[in-house]
Image (cartoon, rainbow, N blue to C red; front, side, top):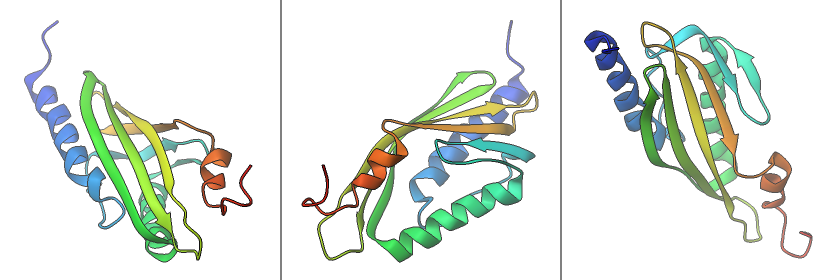
Length: 146
């Protein structure tokens, strides 16, 4: 079946918006016009619904990132329309915690965005390459870490 050219343009808008926004998510706010009002977000530690909650999680990431880290980056590797209603992104988060010992936060992940028939994101699901506990253990000094 040929894809609706208008929808194809909307999917491309979603892809280009994510490519522009994600690399800077720890520094600046994102564009929220590509998300439905009742967006569902799921990652290994959170699950919530609604655009206000979605905006708050990214505000919290920026706030806590500046407070607790001397360096923090979101390295976007790829964003693709996997199907007409699914966009995927792969990325790496890296950082250095603001503590007297040396720390290095590092984990890789992927985001799957599900789109409505009109091309807005209604679901965002993140997966990580390690458990939240293993990520938190990166913050411990070497003499404590197992």
